[in-house]
Length: 217
Image (cartoon, rainbow, N blue to C red; front, top):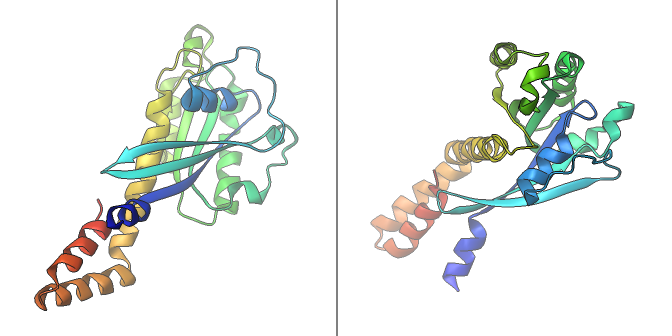
């Protein structure tokens, strides 16, 4: 029974949002990552849509609840509720459409305005399979990411290039950031202090168990 409780304590659930202009491939990025599917003729998403994906990090089960804008971006109607509680965000543009790159700044500003947590952000230049009609050079994407403190990656939902890598990097960064906060929190330090006392008092089994559970990272 003790093992079960430890397993529950080591589960993490993080919300990740995908934002960007209409038709940059947000839904196909999500479906490629979550279900390894791609629909060349996919229509704009209607209604709230998210997928939950699990991955193992340092022996912990980390789940990402990944939200798609649900077509709201066509009307500039993405609500603050969409961003609320997000720990990560992929800001997506289409490398073959300059206008979608030019609008990244607006999406970033909206994200910063509405998010209520520290967000791991990645700039994603999607549709890199369309290199022959590219309008946004790789260097330009990198430069923008560096100036705004974002991760950067070019992807292709069509041929799967870097899709898993992009999502997993963001999720790992969230986990790392949250773990550091747990380790640096007063409540953690107080509990660690109590553990030391309990170990000194001979109650080593419980003390070591608690330290190993919380001392993740």
